[in-house]
Image 1 (tube, one colour):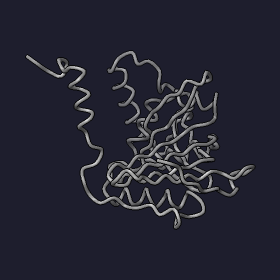
Image 2 (cartoon, rainbow, N blue to C red):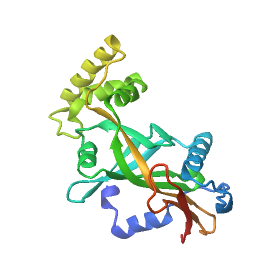
Image 3 (cartoon, rainbow, N blue to C red):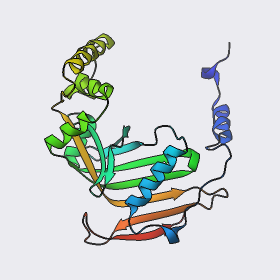
Length: 233
């Protein structure tokens, strides 16, 4: 009996060539002439429009970090905030991404809202927030998120002995959350990426895509100005 495992290489390539990223519908436009002077307002507007368009998980993003040898790794995480200080996300500092950020405090973020034909790429330096800010970040999340943070503790990314061990850890964490709804996980850390580059990509029906990049002016810091430039798609 045939199955997916019997698929030939050519059949698989044919599948890839036949796939479509979007299924019709009118795309929004990006007019560089009317773009704001800095990227944050445009990013917030795009995320809100993705949410209003019904894009699932519009606040999820790809986070790229690198270890001490420069080897990159990717994962999907949740955006907790985006303000004048930067783009916020949380994790355990002993996790793989936490360790990599300690070794190389730079990262890249990627958002992709397929239904709108939009992408945003963000790169910059990452700093860890103060312990009290990290605790407040965790308290502001759902009971399920707090349960997961407590269950994982400082063990995120470590080898798991068995699924039963995970079940027991989650059950103990759930019971603790019921007793202590304000409990905190000491290893939980809020990170803030201060961008030095933000690129907005708007897909266009005839592939005349618009790429608008913001770069911090030479010598600029968190409060510095931005340069705007168009890129060839």
